[in-house]
Length: 225
Ligand SMILES: N[C@@H](CCC(=O)N[C@@H](CS)C(=O)NCC(=O)O)C(=O)O
Image 1 (tube, helix red, strand yellow):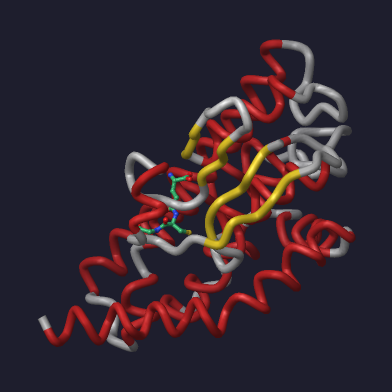
Image 2: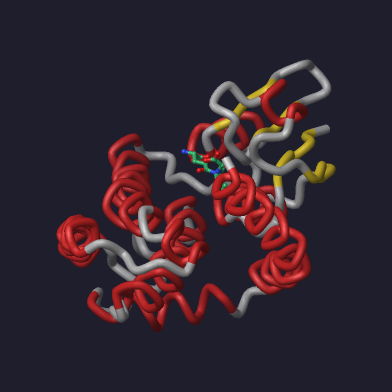
């Protein structure tokens, strides 16, 4: 059986959890926070999420984990059979990670510490997000799913990327980034209605107070040091 390690406030953790639930696979959750010894023992970069298997596999990087789950449990497929179509799905995931997720993440330390985002960083983040908006506007079909008629891994991946883009774009840049991609907000709302997304969201909400305590303790330790 797969064990999913990490914490439910993490969107990366949640996208893998959504995939496991979508495929109806049995799995256990093991609550681990970043920089704990237990996490460092199984995660080469000390990042969440990690999955471990009964066979002794330890795997991190959410998109790599998604591929492993698909390859190992191909029932209820989340990638198209055709290699070209599969690559297009992965292309959307990659663009979402590089030009939506990663720039938005640069805003998180400022949001958590309550300090203003320096203008140079805000400018850089806006530029990368603009590239993401262009790329995802060109690639997304929303007919009704992001890559076309079938729900794919790209839907799950982009949906959880968007939680970060939406939260920190609006709070730190006063920018409704998702509204810039035609059809994105409607699709995002539809994704949020599924029973799986709602379960993942309820678990996320439940974890937020403890997660924020950890963040506050880290900020205090950093300021003291
Ligand atoms: N590229 C990684 C990123 C994972 C990641 O950044 N996870 C965050 C939690 S949402 C984390 O572990 N942060 C702790 C740290 O950066 O030390 C993936 O796709 O899984």
